[in-house]
Length: 251
Image (cartoon, rainbow, N blue to C red; front, side, top):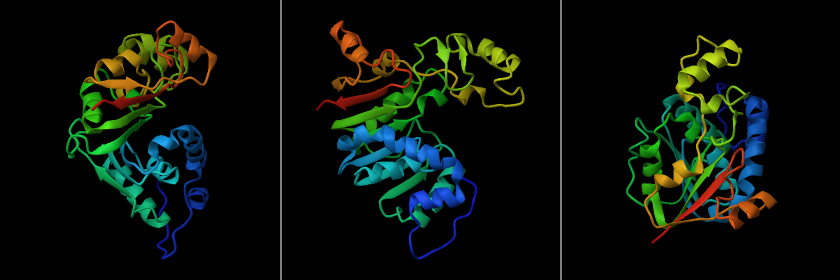
């Protein structure tokens, strides 16, 4: 988002603001609504932390699906500033707050501050090891609340379908994968953000292994493969390209 929204006493509908000022985000907004719709019962009436909120579009979708309030945090100050302007223009600033956090391994909030913590399209942009970040989001979930990890690619599958769109590169050492990406013209040699580009996703056991018990995983059951995997004692989303993990924190 780089455009400047007009100052108006009447809130601008989100869809109109995106169409007129940020057209590149229109499809993303619609996609988020589709992805988050099954999560609406978990969001309804809840206090939500949008961890890695960017400019707050995911926070808006959470409120539109029934969340009571959303607090978003992000590492990048410019995204927070642009997001705050967008919230003010669209009338969501009373229910959504966005804050810049210098080190997202240490969010300035008490243990168990949120009923829902959302990490959407986030962990692939954090280089391994990610344990400190996973443990921080878990700290912030209230007992009985849920951690939602969504839209991070599955590193167990033999392809990078996020950044390079090449087979097997997500299983290779970082330097080798980067070299292949440059040679294949899938990643510009002058870019300095390779480590954060999302080339390697996250796996179920990486996530679960960092969480302190007790917890309950609410496994996906929407597809036959989910039910087959559960029947043999494996995680339902083990083979999903972009899994959605719903983990409820025990008391």
